[in-house]
Length: 219
Image (cartoon, rainbow, N blue to C red; front, side):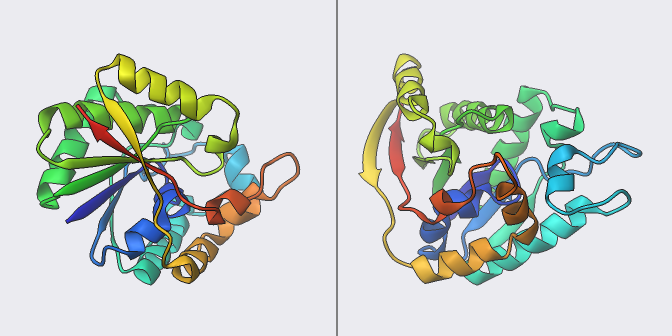
């Protein structure tokens, strides 16, 4: 069983939607899918995504995620931790334990994790995943390149160097080349996030439709 770890409600599909589509019944575990604290002000990203005060942002985004994963034949698992944009960052140990439990519950044989580039939430999930890797070395582990952030010069190379320094050998295995049409349909379900990504000063989402990239992790 393939399990894919996603920091937010879109990252797995943007980064490895074709791989997910190639493994019917895969589980996507989204770590930061919890509701913000009550009475939290509307976050700037959510405003750019078209939300207004009083909207149940997480419910709407979860619906987008559910539809996207249905297109790919995958199942969602949403953890209750909060996105850092809401001013609440969960303890790393709590995230590690929750991921360990989710991976075990899914009877995973292979786990796909973000390289953890640029964004603090992505780094948090990456680091927690490596802690689980240390507990579950018999599983097959892959890392996917975080869409959009992988285009920032030097970030992928820096992450690979950090992995090697930590005793983990990353080996390039290329990317999934099939199911491109399904991925396009799935990406299109994230209407709110595509709107935010195309606001002035942001990178757009072309990279989410570019060839995917994977690294096998051996510890």
